[in-house]
Image (cartoon, rainbow, N blue to C red; front, side, top):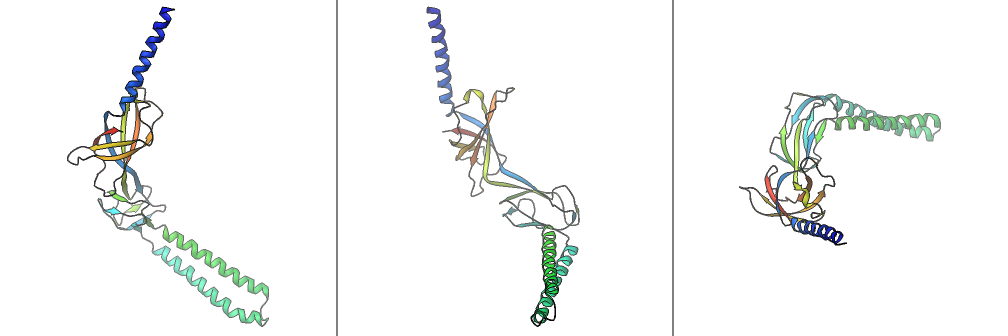
Amino acid sequence: MKSLFLFFGGSALLLFTFVISVGNAAGEELECLIEPYEEVAFSSQVHGILEEVAVERGDMIKKDQVLARLKSGVEEAAVESARARVEFGKRKALRNEDLYQKKLISIHEKDEIETEIQMAELQLLEALEKLKMRTIRSTIDGIVVERFLAPGEYVGEDPILMAARINPLNVEVIVPVQHIGSIKKGMRAKVRPEKPVGGVYTGKVVIVDSIIDAASGTFGVRVELPNPSLKLPAGLKCHVRFL
């Protein structure tokens, strides 16, 4: 009975020690890395020759901003041709409306004219969509990281340029397994970037990995860090303390 008490007493002591270590883990300063919120490689859904690249590395870009254009002479001509057919069809329908009212053409002929207009409008819509695909627009607010192609080069499967969103930023932290349970989603965190940037910034935990890396005995945590003034660059090492 005495040995059983000692066993449970020892287990309770170990459990108590573990709880104390976990409870204090949130105040420890850990190493981290500041990364872009997302990186986007912009390419074209159609092949062709680049006519213009409107941005350069380091340029700030806005969502829906034109980044590049492919040569589109054929597509522009197709749009004008389709638009001319629509306009001609509408004039034809207007002329024949009087004839129909005077019963000089049949309802069948009138229906054919209206159908021709509808088909011409669909062809115009298709031509406009093909022309739109020759223009590459940004899907994010961010900064151009790299430009891979120049005007005159052929656009295939490879990206034209790479951009990164840096507001907010992701702070990636590799946390020792003994801290499991002490860091939870929604917690605040103080991030201290390395010099020469320095300073202290407040972020929020958005991801806590549920899988432990057995080889290193660590798990990952992501802190989302607001960067509205774009003062903080991505790629900095840092230290983080969870509150």
